[in-house]
Image (cartoon, rainbow, N blue to C red; front, side, top):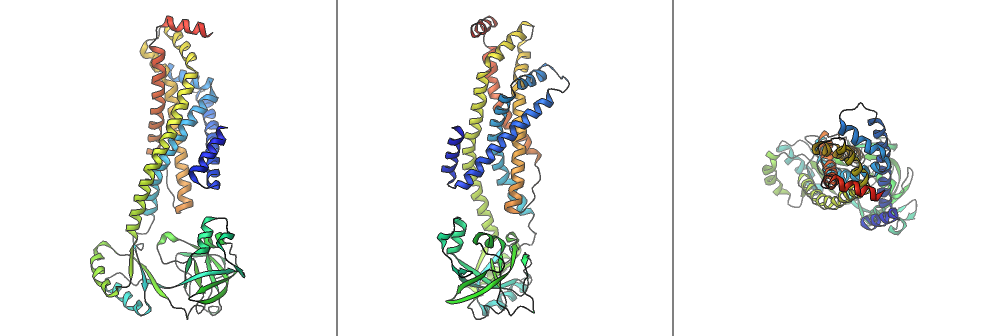
Length: 435
């Protein structure tokens, strides 16, 4: 019932059944991994040489209740991992992505360059010492059919596919493979085959819309129907900030099509003012500042992260409540141990150290697992979403242990105070009654 309720809440919160299922599945898998790891670690740790009464006692308590210890550590680890993951994504992941970009990666896009402005615009950039920019033709088009089948948005279950089916595309034509593109299937046109009508399609678009090598695409380009087969599929590095397109046409296929031009280039800070003065000669050209967009994206992620962190605090609180409930359930056992230790001559300070050892171990285990989980998730996100390799941040483990350990120690302080603040005689009577 609890799992069903969690699934329903995930579906309501996310609004996507598939994504909710993946998230819930990941949660279940993580909990299973936590349980196995905690059981394995406890089995290993209890075999270590004795290093004090507290050390042995804390491990002994966890070893006596491996199922409960795994549940406690898992509940704390999930909440802590969620908070750590948000911190990594908003900080380390974006920083790593920006660091892997070339220093001179284009940070400006210029669009709506007219054919007669192409040469003067390039010359103005060379005059400013910005080199010869890449300027590519661009024509608006709407996809009409794939292999003779008319395109309708409602034929695709995926939302992204529906959006692509409804939108207009920017087509371009290039004699050679662009620098930030890699052919993954088929053959790009050469000088010998450039006269033959053909399209080259980006792999992500092809997978989303069901386009295959050899598929025949039909576009409406300025009221003219243009058809050609797909002769190659390309993988595009969009984060290169070069001028790239989903669909490229072979030279000659769109020669009679009205087109504008688009360019990308690197504009250093020292050249901003001179460029602004020079660009007044091209009042119709729109220049997009990529760095400003990235700053807005980071600000948006920060705002979203603040909301998500607030929600994940409840997850951590739920873990704390689980820990507290488990602590209450084992309070009688803890009381009996305290009475026995007090009878054997243990001081109050020694009792505190011994009884808190269990919670110290729980915090260390949960925090370490949370940091490991957050690091793994960040590495997967970096590779799959941004194509960057992000290393393990040692401070993540420090923060993870501090967060989980703090929650565990609060529960421990409450439990220990209930044990120590009652006279031994009263404890013995309560134990006798419970027995």
